Image (cartoon, rainbow, N blue to C red):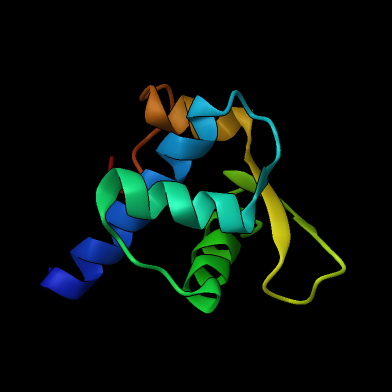
Amino acid sequence: MNAAHRREEIIRGVILDILIQHRLEWVASDSLRLEILRGQGFVLSSDDLLFHAAYLADQSRRYVEILPLRGGRDQFQIRATAKAVDLHDERIPADPGVMF
């Protein structure tokens, strides 16, 4: 695995960690981007965050739910699902696209 893929997997794990810490409550995308930067030092554009959110929300994964906001395509709310908690707590098999 190359470093770029590993970084993407880590970012998705960080996103889920943060959302789980919010107790499955909705989090604004801008707030999530700031928490990722503050906590882990990853700088994500709105498009990058949307890409990772879509990956995590994909029908085969369903680790997050996304609620679009009127501010445009890059403005949304997001929350973790119970399945994300199960993944994090190793109650379901590991996902090769997410690294905690």
